[in-house]
Length: 99
Image 1 (cartoon, rainbow, N blue to C red):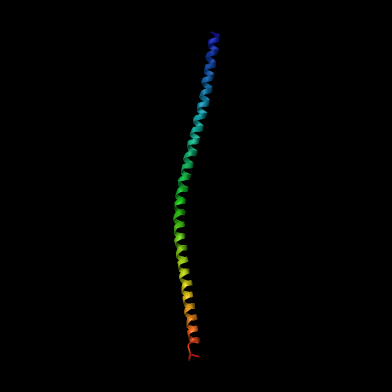
Image 2: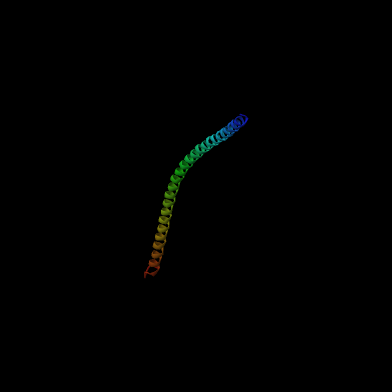
């Protein structure tokens, strides 16, 4: 009887130990779940920020492209004006009777 009682106590001790381990596992799982929810929220915020950044990049790219086109136009216009002035001077000084 004594052996059966000690065996029962040992089994109850083992059961109690397993209960403690299981409760610890449940607490850790709940903690992980909270961290996963937080991580998911942060990922959603990051996704929204990346979409806003992408829109900003597109706007900046379009603005820079337009600025480059304007600069090309200005340089071409200056080049044409300089060419017309040079051609005009050449014609003025090379045509007989204009000096």
